[in-house]
Image (spheres, rainbow, N blue to C red):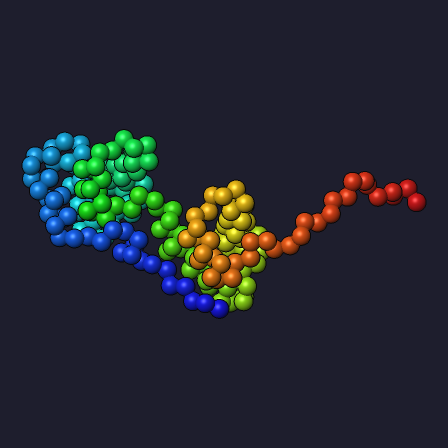
Length: 184
């Protein structure tokens, strides 16, 4: 069974360089810290210095500021292309993770699949199976369904294939079209 080592947060986010961090500090020193954007960046800088990334829980409060909501809103604005290049550069310098689902897959779900495959020798996960609190059976079912509709990124398909994931498990059962005669 191949061994998959999931990447850490440091591997999934852009590497932080000193010059980028200096850009953020210079931006704050220019008086931006008094604007709502500046207060958010100041809180993000404190969080990033402590944790090394910006995977912030949705309702996290940092130094009295709602950083979780700030980050959540900027992710939405990023997807809708309502954010300028300077803001993207500053958030990337702090270690912003724009797609948290990919990080969750890399850090939580893939290790759960790996543990199951090592223990059982296959990845035919029963529908109601839980692995360390993760509904792995439901995740397996949903992943198969999402692949049918083309919604699974290629990197996930490649990793699951390397673990021996079976995309089709069994043939569909025949359905009965009539009820059995119980009159006899």
